[in-house]
Length: 341
Image (cartoon, rainbow, N blue to C red):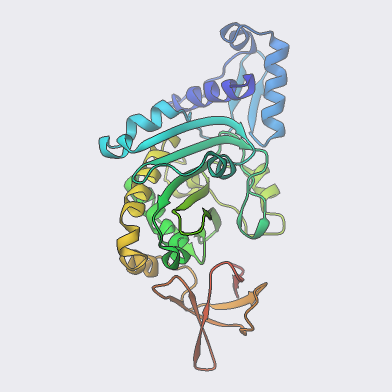
């Protein structure tokens, strides 16, 4: 782990331990703890700031993360998994920096049937979103997480996996006390204020062989105004979990990651049998688009603007125009409501 990321975890631990009084860590104390110079600490702080982490610096007091934060270490995630889910982990890591968590898992290859790999990263040099977009997240203020699974021949059902994954993430958030989140077709988690997170499904397969599926999730935990303004340029305004809790203190990131993995492994274990049908009612209850005017663009289907009427069991968006329902397949269009969502 680089000094900057070690420093991030130390600052996050200190921030999570705060009660009523802010806790600052002096540059001298940090230099002694990591056996480096104060100049090295200063440079590491500068790198974190460059990547979007907001850090307060007060003369004679030291450094403190400006936003609520908590550490993210693999030991903490594994300790929070149920024994059954923990036994299914082939490889699990929480890294400081990678090109993309999904890219790493795709290159690693599929886990054996019934097992899974997971990887989180504080910083992604080439984080990916849908339709070739970049995914940006400040170290310490977000969750960048991917997990992989192996299916034996069921490509006809995978078109709805991103929608089912969204339902599993909502279940995970509810289990740690987070409510008020909706799902925006085909892969966004949103609130009334903007975008909270996104899901990206990537699949590799060989002829007549198993399917290697990697699910990527980006989730804003405590982003901060500077990064929020940067991320929001040209797109949906970002929001974070800190806005959804009364005290502004989101659940520990290790607890969030464990809950997300727990719910999604349960989903994947049953998806071959159940498909999206088992999650359809929950998706409909959380559908952010249903009943709203939508604008369709960027796809190959010549479908006019209309009113969103939910999704079907295959994960297609249903759009009504002139009394007719049109099926829009995930990945072929982008969607905006008339209100800018």
